[in-house]
Length: 172
Image 1 (cartoon, rainbow, N blue to C red):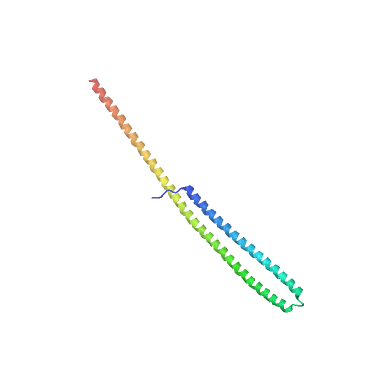
Image 2: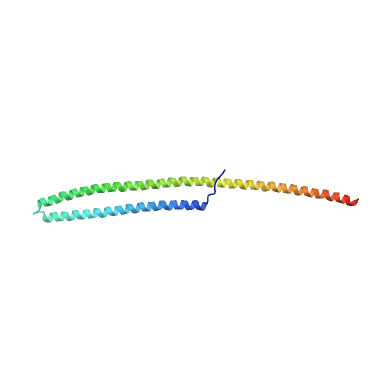
């Protein structure tokens, strides 16, 4: 089985970097939502203040300026209606952005999970290969020991035979 070397530290660093990117994206999305909510809240408060001010002005000038006030009220109501429609559109856009961000996060998690599974398979394959190497090495060492022992015994036997042969030759 041909595999290339994978550095576990590099894998851990890659996983940590992906986790940091996911966290940064979540924080960025949260900050954007909070900012949009704060802006809309301020706008709504300003609209409320405008409505209150217009009502007060209407009541103070009501007696002498009936038609002008009525026109201003209609205009304010139209503006309020338009602003409410704008708020609805902005809310829908914010929800869509939140959904898209969540979708992107889920896709990133799925990609990361897939990569992690592949890396785990690679690690398991490397472990198996290392164990196979260890077993082959052990077998080779055992074979070398047997060969050494047999060769050593053969040499000892040869020494005994040669010694006997020399003693017989010296005895003549």
